[in-house]
Amino acid sequence: MAHHNPWPDEGNTGHIWDEDIRELDNPPPLWWMLSFYMGFVMIIFYTLYYPSIPLVNTHTKGLAGWSSFKEYQEEFKVLNNWRDKKFAEEEEKLAALSVEEILKDDYLRTYAVKTSKMLFGDYCAACHGSGGQGNPNFPVLADDDWLYGGTGSAIKVSIAGGRVGNMPAKGLLGNLTDDDISHLADYVIALSEHKGDDPSVALGKAAYGKGMCMACHGPTGKPMGPTGAANLTDQAWRFSSHKEEIIKLIAHGVNVKKDGKLIKGTKNAVMPSFGKRLPNAEVNIKRLAVYVHQLGGGL
Image (cartoon, rainbow, N blue to C red):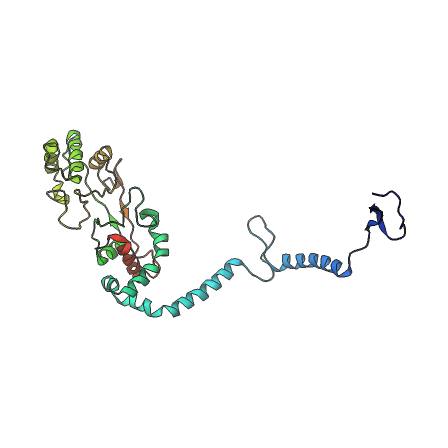
């Protein structure tokens, strides 16, 4: 950089390179300065016109009264109106037909399934999993094992009215000893493996009769109908297949109460009623019943 400035009156900064390359000290163009100051004006305008300044418990609302939530509501209303018009015929059919009739109509069944995914995610997935695979201690909806029936109408009843599991502690008569319960757990495991007649579980089979388990689970471990009792002859376990957990289940039962409160160790197995929880419940319960039926385990 040169120390001599051959152009002292040019208005340069005195920084010169390669003898004639210099840095000038000219003011910005007028249009640029106006734009710069206009930016400050716009900051003031936006601060006053839109919500902007946070306060202790709220914020300034702005002169326009605008909010992103209001805009969302308005756009959502437009979307819903469009949906109502476009799918009015399908919605009328869902309201008029039974679940079984919807299942027989390929187009309507597909429509019900596609429009149920969000409902299932909002109201069912927390317990039954996003794909109906069942979260721990909650029923699987994607198999063909049903406690209360897997027909479309039965599923609808379950969703609308809810379900409350019931299994007495220590057998139906409450007369099983700790040894009986241990032997019975072995027998239950053997039933699931189709080895119920094995001599090694004879004591458990006797305990099965002593506790009157057959009243709910049937003489051979298979209920006579969809009464809410588990089928003990398959590999579908409501809670656990481990012996120690089965022992706890037999000992403390399901939803066993004393003085109006659940006893210690009992399983709390309750599905709430969605008859009043769901928006447009009459149609949406049918919609969900079709969706659950189509997950893979409907009858």
